Length: 495
Image (cartoon, rainbow, N blue to C red; front, top):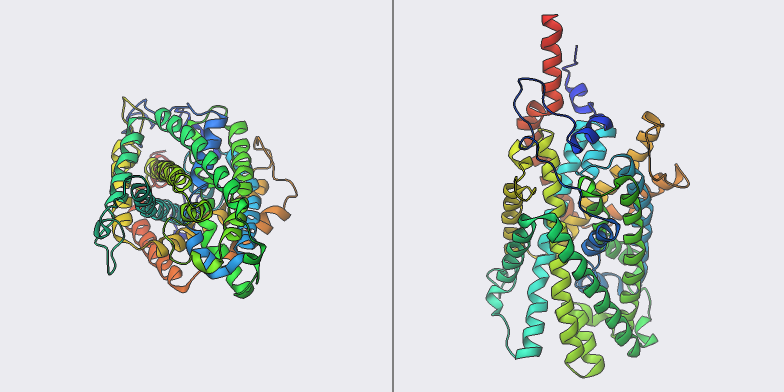
């Protein structure tokens, strides 16, 4: 007989075999039972290869921090922001190894939500799912907010006009709302609804463009490099370095985005870990080089409040507009790519939670024509669009870092739990230096969490309250594991 105690319900785990069977369409409802989690016979399609998946990771990471977060991170750490990027990269590197193992062992959609469900239980999984939804939704909004800056930079340099300020920024003394951000989210959702194959092709092309643009920035910025701009190196102390590292960590969200594509990847046990590691290496090298070149090219005090900062650096160095125009175009393309991948990741997490009964099953409905969660994507687009249009950017970045760090910690802990509970489970990749690497990953994540601003924890607390209300008001009663337990109890009574 299934246990009905609250503790047992919170700790019940979804078997890895069930997760994989559902992702492959091999597990349906019992005879006579209604369909759950999508239309009959329709499943996410495996159409993504290694380089396309690597582009998803790179696309969701490069640009998230580099194109605009320097303007908020540099004033916190000064030239030592370079060290902040190193700390964030080390944390992401340790976690990436943990993600690689979990993704190769549990190659399904849902990312750390699904991993937590298999290792730490339903209660933790739901909390992680809410953190991920907050993380992805807020991250997409933060990225979309900055699109107007680079659009205005491009229009100003190329055509001599700007989008009116009142409709090109989050509400404050000079802005009403951010219209470009709304348009960006609408275009991204339209592309995602058309199909994942088309979306990843567009993203791969955009990733190539953004890498070339960043290489252009590094090359030009290094010609204006002045070592004096690096001194004093740590004017705000080690505390400033920690604050900046905590703030910019959300830019490594792409590592999680790779694992959300688990059910749409060819040969996932091999492809997922390889793509995660490729993404991390490319991103880390470019991040540190861009930060070093940018800090060396202008005094760190000038970053505070600088609009379209990297494009402005190119214009100041060359005294010409064409490098800045090229960079602004690259940033416009890059931000589109990032928004595309991040919203894609959020829709796949919602899909997994809907299929599990943790959220209404409509979130798991797929279009029979495109194989995409259309209604799900529309809901995400509306939520992200409202945040992007009406919430200030500075708050968005820190909230995303909190969600990212929590999710990364759970994945690292999950590696340890799964090694103990299912040591013989097939894994396409194993974390080297186990258990030191997973424990170090958790330690670094906790260190960065302590560097976040107090109001970030207030937002996180509000998200936790929402999670508790939704879980006990809906999810705990509609979970597929709950219904399976009820059927088992009914069967035992009949027997």
